[in-house]
Amino acid sequence: MSRPPTFAPPPGARAHSLRTARGEFAVVDAAVADGVAPRGTALLLPGFTGSKEDFNPLHEPLAARGYRTVAVDGRGQFESDGPADDESAYAQDELAKDVLAQVAALGGPVHLVGHSLGGQIARAAVLLDAGSFHSLTLMSSGPAQISGSQQQRVKLLRDALTVMGMAEVWDAIQAMEPPEETDTGGALDSGLDDREDLRRRWMATKPAQLIATGRQLSAEPDRVAELAAVPLPFHVLSGSHDDTWPVPLLDHMAVRLRARRTVIPGAEHSPNTDRPLETARALADFWDSASSPQQGRAAENR
Image (tube, rainbow, N blue to C red; front, side, top):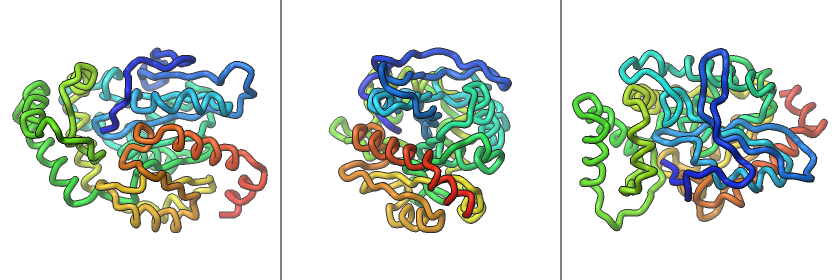
């Protein structure tokens, strides 16, 4: 789980509901900075147990580079509604279709960024309709299932959610972790604290969403070859350490995709909150290059 420094939208951004053909989705929508020529729009998908606020530190620096950024709560995440007990509503294909509806509502195409679980949903959306996107950035999101240690942690969470309520699970997570534990940035954050904003996000997230997407993370097949055949510019971005997908695995995925590769020094699984300025710079540099005629021709020749 990413830990945003604040749940309040940053200057220049507003929280609202994005109406789409597949329902309404809660977003934080940041316009291009005053006096800056618009260069495009980016849609940002959060990871497992996360939310749109995980991208709050990125909005201002990306607005200054000319990009409108729209971070979204997926179906059943935080402030976007969804069924509490119908796991079929959170099948990856359904979540990918939600993304396509969000792009259509924004007037797409857009640059797509998916963090962790969001990266796998983003990949599925691109494979459904690559024409809705200018580029794809996979942020701390690997080629297939999460690491064995993270699979064990996600299974513990899924098992708990089948017999306990969200409040009980939250209290159990707090009791299991020592107060001095710090954020490891894994698929299930080991450093959750009792801040009210984090608890509020947890309580609002639908348990069926967590169970279904946790299962996806633990069983996701390798679809890199399929994605590599898509004529889009790709970007693989991560911190210099990651327990969810080892960095060498992400390096190899970038080679297979012929993607731009960015490693953010000092960041772990959530470079968007660990090192936001460096992450924003890397994203904007990639989007700038993805918009160039040379990059477009390269993508067409993939």
